[in-house]
Image 1 (cartoon, one colour):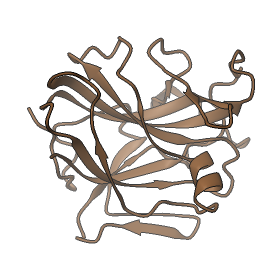
Image 2 (cartoon, rainbow, N blue to C red; image 1 turned 30 degrees about the horizontal axis):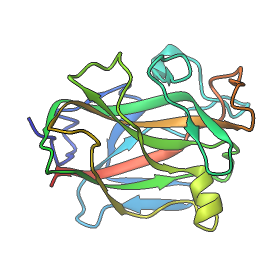
Image 3 (cartoon, rainbow, N blue to C red; image 1 turned 30 degrees about the vertical axis):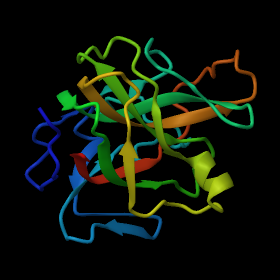
Image 4 (cartoon, helix red, strand yellow; image 1 turned 90 degrees about the vertical axis):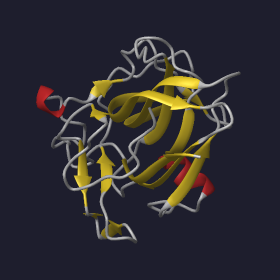
Length: 217
C-alpha cells in the first residue's frame, strides 16, 4: 500500500501513533508567540508536545504520555555530528505507517515544519526511520535526519523554526522498499565523549514537528 497523504480533523486514519496525547491533529499551532498554519487551511499532524514537562523542564515520566525511551531501544542509532559531538535520543514520540511500498525508482516526499523553543537547552530533533518488512524490533535502515536544534542554532542563524519545508528521501536499497516508515521527534542530549550515555533519558522538553502532507513520488 501507499501512504495516506492527507490529514483531516477526523483523525489519523491509516497511521499509528505512540500516544494520542503526544501526536495529534491540529489546524494551527502556537507556542511562545510563534503560530503555524497550513496555506490551504487544512490540517496537519503535530508530533510531540513541548508542554509535556514537569517543573524542572524535564519530560513528564507518567505512562499516560506514552513517550518512548530511545536510549533503551536496541534499534536506536545515535547521531554523530560533524564537530565530533554525539546526540542521544531521550524520550520520544512517533507517527508511523506500516506495510508501505516504495518502488526503487520512487522517493518519499513530505512537507514539514520543525520548531525549537527558547527554553530548550538540549538538542531536540526529528528523524525518519525505515524498517524493512515491518520489523520494528530490528535495526532500521540508515536514519534520515530531518532537523534538530543544533542545526537551527549553528547552521541557520539561531532561528526557531524551519517554516514549511519539502523533503524528498531516497531509500538506500537495491530494490523496492516494503515495510514501516516512522517519523520520530525526541528530546536529545549531546555529549563530547561517545562512550558516555546520559543517565537521565527524559532530558529537557522536546521539539515539535508538524507534517501537513506525505506522498510517494
